[in-house]
Length: 510
Image (cartoon, rainbow, N blue to C red; front, side, top):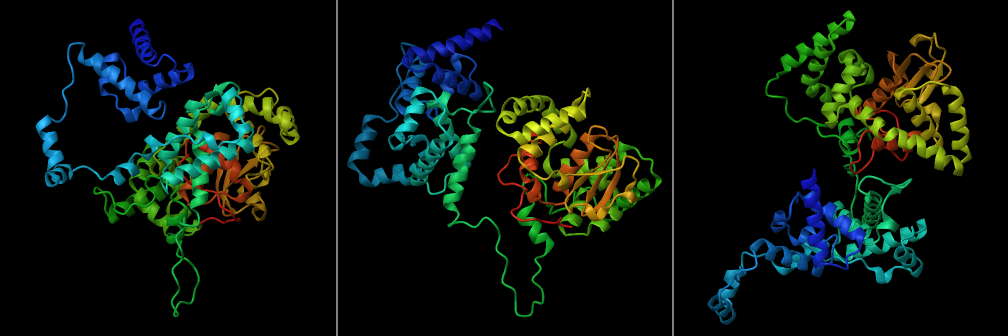
């Protein structure tokens, strides 16, 4: 432990000795950057490259550091040899033909400039409004309007250097901004740095760039012109799904069946699961293994637009917690319940503390909801009740329709007693009780039909709800889009580009 601390001190002193005027905040970021690169001791400096440092330091500063580290690694008595001897240099100068031939393997200056424009990019602070610069220089957080103006200016400059900047480029530029104006721009909630500290800047920059590119690129496949003989305007279900529902998935459409499987073996396993379902007693591990091995056939059925009722008959475990968890993990690469519980334990309390401390003071609706939930929850404690708080408070915060997510019925009601005409077409949790806190049983409905009438835990119900959206190619409804997107990104770590929301009311894909 002491040796690690000594190494850190050595690394810090080796930076400050070369760049004594470097601000402490930049010095801290430099330390973190070197650690992320794998630098553990000063001997590792010889492997650091200039490009690794340019998002924190100016080019000259980076070169000074590298030159100093190089001398340290070589020792005082050793001087680096030039790469080209004098005779070679003179021959290159006097012979244009040989010069062209010897340099031909190197990329052209234009290509090189396009490749490393991010390394050469400079924040256009001279174009920033005076009010913004005052905030940045004094370490104060700019108001939203000034921050948006900064994003517009920076994104415009980025697109001058590269017409189509990537998300990686936006990330590097965001790092530069936060490194230069740490106190003003880093992501902070209640004094704690959120994530990397620059994620919100990345999202804003990329959103601005995407907006400016909208006229040049089409984000959705255009429907092919229909022939004169066509008698329908319906787009095939598989075409719809291929455009809209691959977000967050690593194995959405399997082109080939596993080499260990055949159509006969897939059908045999499917029939075996039907028998196990009808018997009502089964080994969860066996069912999970069967669901995983028949994933290919399940995805083909879903992506081909098979009707919901047919899916229930052919793949009954797809609507059971075991089956939907297995399908979700194959589809996204993430374990459904484990990921959810881990995130709740890590971030749930932070969110629940933030809502009453900040949001309730600004929004009366949130304050009233928190008061109501406190009364309903009473003295109940536990992870499940924390999740109920989170979901219900988020619905209030985003001012979204609770009835689209929860349908309340009598505690003793069975599936046949539920008024399905009142159910939404998108996945919905049916609460058997007066509130989520008092209920001891839940159901899940999809397409206005109850697909599982006996879910004992609220966490299982909310996970199955999320899983059904992904596994069945269903978009988040407009009435719940913000709440579900937040929970998905906050708790399920599904934060890839795009979203499962839609701009209009939608029904399920099946």
